[in-house]
Image (cartoon, rainbow, N blue to C red):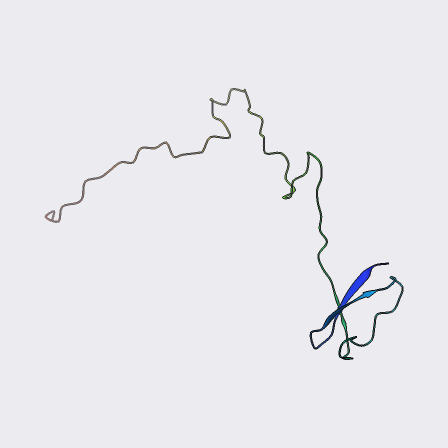
Length: 95
C-alpha cells in the first residue's frame, strides 16, 4: 500500500498509509480543516548502463573523418582567418 501526503489550508502536512482505492480524507488530522490537497512529488529517474547519461545524450566521443575535407577537424574551434586591416585615421584638414 502506498503512502499519500496531504496538506490542509492551514499548512499542516500529514501522511496516510492507505490503499489506492480508499477515499481521500475529508478533513485535516491536526486541525480538522477542509478541503485537503494531495501533495505530489516528481518521480526520480535513474538511467543505468553505458548508453545513458543524466542529460540523456549519447557518448561524448566523436569519430574523426579521414576523408578529403581539407584536413579540417570538427573538434577544432572555428576562427576567422581574415587579417584585420588598419586604415589610417582621416585628417581633419581635407577640404
